[in-house]
Length: 515
Ligand code: GAP
Image (cartoon, rainbow, N blue to C red):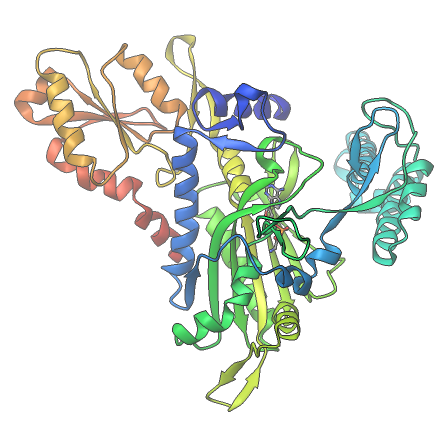
């Protein structure tokens, strides 16, 4: 299966098996907005819970917070979102379609990079073992041309955005001959900045004074509560505040399913530390966050770090954790050393002191902050892409199986009476009723056992528990393992322990603590 096929299959699997639906689909949907179905909501809750427990339960110096989505409008002035949280947009006059100018340029760069890669691979095949790729990349005229063109785009885009000279960016799009994918023409408008925040108003009457914004990140709720949490939690620096919640961005370019949405959820940590110690903590969190991903069993080489060369003016280090999605390596999480930028700005705009008094040194200072920020929906997509498999099984049949980590699986076990008679459904019901207080289960007596196994494989249920005629006499059942399809006989009295050990969040957290 090639990557394009894999992605299409994951998207249609999501709909068919109740993971993700287009929002308000009966009205033809809403661009870049999605709803989570019966299995999606469970998987998403489990991912969130894994993050939450890894932060607030495994780390004694991290406290949780749930700030409101609405915040005082000054928050966004202080954070720089009103003036700076925008994308450069360009419209094609013929198709009337709007694009992000930087995305058009990035796509052009990807094409150049693919061409360079093709040249390198051709040369590798020609020269065999003696091929020196690094040397080839710096000496082959065609490859050098492509790489220079990529660098030229980077530099011009950076200069245009930093100096506000959007004319430069339009000129670059024209110079490169980029056409509208819909009309095929180069009939472009000027490039304009377009703020990504949604606004609404607090009062019933639109006065213009009480313009509110739907938060575009959860981080600011943490900054404005820094003193509240620190004082009420009697915490000492270094410590962190963790928060998960919905955020909203008017993303014009909706792409790749739930990868880029207008309403999505973030899981963010702001870690407050002493100025001067921030780069040590940055290194710690960079490593720690990758461990969190790897504890789920995802292949290590599916991940890579992408260190930022161009840093935002307030950051002194930044890295993305990227995952190899079917459409290439893309950011799933960002780790930023944000200095004291946010707290200083809120101090300036609110007039309130946002300082920490260090009892050991008798000093008062604005802490530095290391942020880790991951999109829950992007993590959800990553999880499904990594888990989706089609496997040939006996008889030439192909089974679709989601090899999800058991702690993330929407349903932990299916209770399946082999037939609908002879007291088997009653015994299944009894087991279900006994275990439902601890686990999300599924019980079904329709269809052949083979069909029921396949349906459970398709939603990633780690265990199928089958009740047959011997079960009644022996008080035992067959337990089938999703990944290996192995079956073994166990006593009914053992089920709770098996499910706790194999599907509980604690085993996953223990693994995380050990790697
Ligand atoms: N407080 C920092 C911050 O918001 P960001 O890079 O804009 O940083 C963090 O967002 C994470 O949120 C990203 O790494 C990504 O996983 C997720 N994310 C960002 N925009 C998104 C969108 N439109 N749809 C889905 N997830 C998104």
